[in-house]
Amino acid sequence: MGEIHWGGLVAAYLFFAGAGAGALFLAAYYLLSGKADSQYGKRITLIMSAIGSVFLIIGTKLIVLDLTTMQAGIAGFNVDKFFRFLNFFTHFRPESMMSIGSWLVGLTIMTSIAFLFLLYRNKKPVVLAVVNAILSICIASYTSLLLGDISHNFVWSNSIIVLLFIISSLSCGLAILIIIKALINEPQGNSPELEKVDCGVLTIELIIMGIFTYSVLNLSNFHQLPFVLSTDYLSGNLWFIGALGFGVLIPLFVNLKTVITTNGYAIQSHLKHYILAFCMLGGAFCLRYAVLLAGQYY
Amino acid sequence: MNNSRRNTLKFLSLGACTAAVSFMSVASSLSATKNGNDKRHLAMAIDLRKCNGCRACVVSCGVENGTAPDEHRTEVVQIVSHKEYEEAKAFNLPLLCNHCEDPSCTKVCPVGATFKREEDGIVVVDSTLCVGCKYCVVACPYTGVRHVSRETSTIDKCNFCIQRTTQKLLPACVESCTGGARIFGDINDPNSALSLLLKEEDAYVLQNDKNTKPNVFYIGLTQAEAARTYSLNIENKWQR
Image 1 (tube, each protein chain N blue to C red):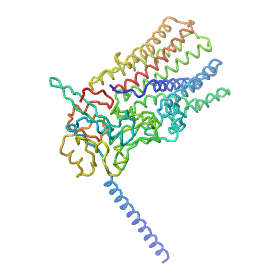
Image 2: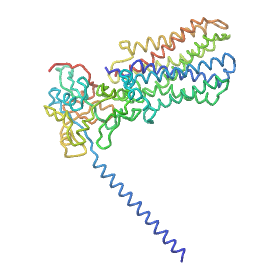
Image 3: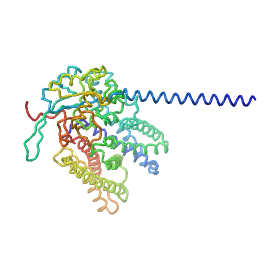
Image 4: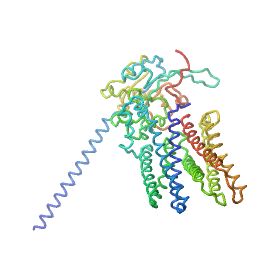
């Protein structure tokens, strides 16, 4: 059994970066598709891009807090160690995915804040929306490539993780959208459009999770190693109960029920929206934590 | 007349330039070959048949490198290898950084703090640059060969006692090995004790399937045993 060096803080970083990227992508989509032209649409775009930026900043803070030099700098009031993280930005190494990622996240934080500022000033930053959409896809991919770069680790180097993390980022973005819509009390339409989109995304996520589970099981058997996504391990519990159960199956069931039973206008309770969204967000965190742990168990 | 003189001068200057460039390229390639020959390829062989598990290597490493008593750059773990229908085999297994030819730790380092020295192939960590992201730790297939130094708060690992080996001295662990199990030297030198030993004996590297081309060779280990994952931090299975 391998040793765990990357734990909750790194998992939280992967989650916040992924969810932030999802939110920024949807904010850009709202602006580019013209949905932001309406009064509610504009508020949603504004809040969504603000949440996206804040999530990216929180994620960056968390990964910096995980640095051993930062922890020692805080504990020992050591200025040199405290500011050692700046080495990320004084060195650029294109062969290191973490180096690429630090610059990518830094750049995205800046563009997302610029996007937010222009939106707030009643401008329509189309170019920045396109840039943000591209950068958010890059960030969603990067969080998986950070792990996938370790080629000898057959859990992390599994190519399907890239798709899994991208689709999970999108579902996080949708969860944030659900929360915002409930918060601003947007009038609900005649047909459950968001629920339909959510169903589609969650179904794709479910299929990808199935493929990933199957491939890890196969590779574990091939290498004669224990299946670390089984419920004997914390990674397996997080995977099946957190990521699959709470993150995908429950929201998918609730959404499907809404789509099938409300054949037309039906008011959904906000409590249901909040529960649904927090299930999806919690599931996305569990998904990343499970993958992070599973790769280190080997 | 003027034209022909000009042409002659042009021709001569062109010739001179070509000769100069040719000479430079020959000189630089000669120097490159010389440098290539001068480069050392430091490696270690560990003869498990001679390792008595005294851990003198662990202690001397700590003394030489000033690490804390519970922080080890090398450790001797005790392994019990069960073979089906046969008696269990127990052996001492000294572990340390493998100073791989194709190390996964150097590629992933975001600040270039972990790098492989060109002159001797030693993989080192620059503690003044390292941020402590632990990417090298998770990228290395050999678990446990690194630790976080309490003194520097950065990643620390074996560096083949760089302060000694650059002066053509042996690493502390090799010098102190009571059984003479650790053999250190330059693989590029065909007459070194290490090269001669590796020619004579069947030596395996740990987890060869990871394709990192380690430079620590084990003698007395079967291929199956070498393919297993070992950690510096495992609990010892039996008492001496």
